[in-house]
Image (cartoon, rainbow, N blue to C red):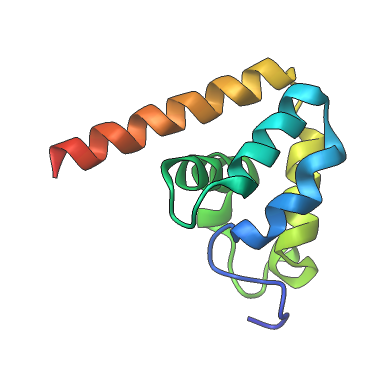
Length: 106
């Protein structure tokens, strides 16, 4: 990648920059995720939500998003989400359930 801030998928190091972008429920979620251990269910679910919000799977080296970097892309993705914080929390819970289901199936 061209920039130090650009990775293949959402990096958890960006999560603290997202904390104050929305309301109290979002802030509590980000705090919970940051406080959890590396590769915990919380961090995996949060990453999955952010990967989906930011369309990380369609990002490539020459894309505008990659050139700007993951931090800016993640901030913009959270800011552009038109739903309420409750909907983001719901997406997070659904991601947790998906991960648990997947881990139980393998």
